Length: 484
Image (cartoon, rainbow, N blue to C red; front, side, top):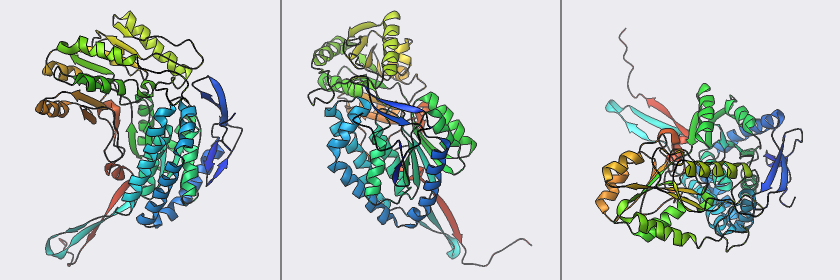
């Protein structure tokens, strides 16, 4: 077990174990082998984590924002110095190719720590002058103990995307990674302590849904931030609402990507590849409904097929490999089920569609054409390397179809008509939109969805509002008048 951590949990600045918890096997998706075994948090571990976070938070919030920011920026530097080591761990945690994790995972986490570290010293209230000399001032306050619940597709990034704004605002965090990818968040916790964060300010506990439920419903928790599926989001949101807790929900999608006749086909194909096959298709914002105007449909499919011939599938630790396995056997089987539904419902299989005959959880990148809006593969989130290509004729038609979904995470358009590009994104019912590109998520920009795809935003200055609240203070400079 080469990747066995010191212990399953990281609490109060150190590794903690309780083998009474349910075992969690960490499986390397490229081989199917168990590379580590952890244990789900027992009630005692959960109590220890929350107690530690509650105790640490008071001292942390009493520090100046500049002092907190210094810790976060140091952590970002350490993370960048160890990028290769962290990327190797991420690859074994998720199966994503090292070529990808070296540039998209720990680096994105470091960006978040640096960005919110830079903002921490600027978090202030405001002075509001009123008539007659009275005034109001506001105080930005931390919420308290925040719970982060991570997904398995970007474990390092998500641990930082939630942790960095929470800590910048003076909160403590208890983070529960996905049980499928439990290793990377432990390293984030280690690095924060090394950078000078107080013990207990960022704790990691492992576990299944029962551990998440225990954290979400604890009265000491002020805020819950979840990245996950819509069904999980419904449950967590409802549980948090019972205690009137603050929430951020970053959930799934079935996002449209519209390619007009006048688009640069090479760029449109690149966008479709990034929006469907990066991370083996396991990205929540993927543009999995690719609407191609009829005039260029066959040219688009021909070029896409040519480009897919350059896919290099293999050992994710080989830096020449650009397409890795699915995260787990269960997820692979879910995706295979959707591929069979696509065939059964009459979609035309243009490329891929099969599992590779090798160890690990490998699927070919799969493209269906002649997909219609009512097909299962066009309606449900697959979370795997399956692209649905749909035809359209007019802008009005495609906009109505693109928005005809319960989801609203992302949307993209490829066109060289500047006015149409802006008109289309204005009409999208989605939180994160792209013009002539797809799936970029810089920390400086808000990320999140509308409709069933979530509540709140991650990243950017907006995230500060989701991890803090304003206290309003009215100051009277005059006598108090009363009716009697």
